[in-house]
Image (cartoon, rainbow, N blue to C red; front, side, top):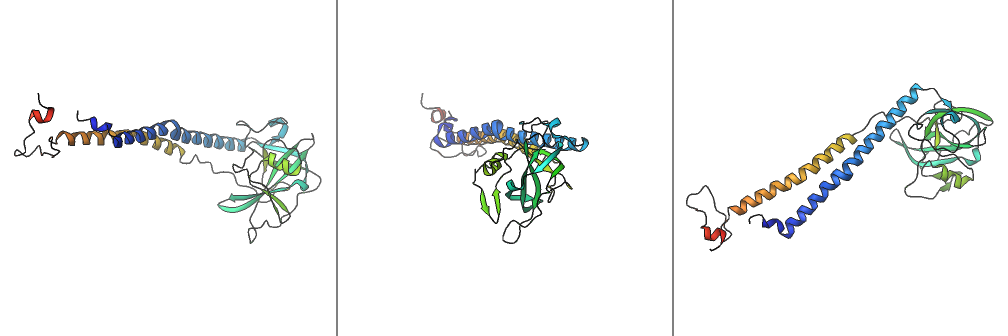
Length: 271
């Protein structure tokens, strides 16, 4: 049989690699990009909706102790309370508008006794990549408006850095701030709008673009289809080449009348 070459170790390894790649493309890589596309679309819809809805009191949007969810993330809320400047923390290694930045977060104690983490905005690093001087938060009771955001987490679980009179962390995580300051914080945080009491450089909103994830998902599907097709083509070509070889391993030319096909006994074995 001219297809028995597929049982050779090299071909078996190639079939295994191509099969594994196609399975990953269909079951992991393409769905992963589809999920990222759906997440971006949901985020864009939430941001667009936040422009159409005026800020609402926080507790009308999010009950005490609840984390922002798919229906509340990016909504504009209004909070009234007092800043706790002694628990202010700096978030390092941030990027804003394509340039390095620090962000400053501070707890805000609300009238109902709960405390919410507030992102004051960003600062550009001073020479030597140091935290520059910046104005303190206002004293006394303030009313601020901002957008609800999901809490972040640091995948590397890195420890806080202390220096220059500041405590610096790597993600806006209320749990990390609570462990450093002893202030019990609600899940999630609020990103201040421009012009609010205590805001520094107001953080820009993400661009309302779904990105290339849908195209990437379709590409992975195409690659998953093309890989076995390519393998099939090369296997067929190898089979055709072997079909035109004589028993001694010499390749014959079917177009050359002086190069006849091997006798049946040679091709199929002696009867």
